[in-house]
Length: 259
Ligand code: F6R
Image (cartoon, rainbow, N blue to C red):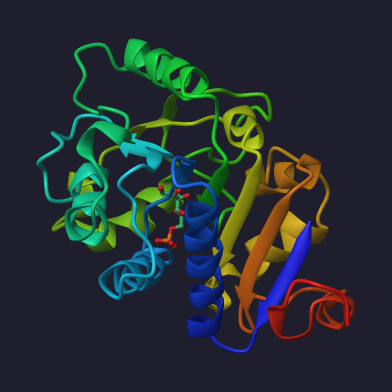
């Protein structure tokens, strides 16, 4: 695991955007795994800026999002379909036929989850997976105690996730309780992973995922098993790391490469 600590949120975000854009430049028909949430919004803004400046194009790139709420129509403003359209897909040249998000409104959501897992495999798997992390250590919607071998399936949101996500809904009671999410094993099958975490509210999850025991109580700790994971964090999210000096010596300023 490469732990990359940046002075500011902006520099961490720009580094992640460079990582994604660099992957697409090197392999235009690559498969990206994408996340939603507040943390990655500025990453999409930075990708749109690169696209508008003519520095990257996405017309051959495939995407698979991590998750979607069960019960929301794709057109619902709080669905992850709408989120992706708003922040990235409608503002760039991604082709609709190449972008995939689980259908939360499927008549049989469990069958939709199985289908989604097969779709990912059928596309040859994910080249580079973008992740955020929940304050409780979730990745995708794999909440604490999720099986570390889980694949795409239905998952009930933890109460703290419902509370955190209620900021996007008018009432907490409007937040869907169930999601379709890639599993932890699905995520670990990606060739490469880039996780972004910023802000002091993520410091504990960041510590547990990097330095804690491998445990279903912190699903993100499963990334310790992955050979090519990069964790991009700002100074606040790095605050609880006990080996911070070591990470900063290996990757000064978050740069990959030895000092
Ligand atoms: C959603 C997802 C989640 C978020 C996590 C952090 O697709 O993957 O795991 O990354 O809930 O959300 P924010 O960034 O809003 O704190």
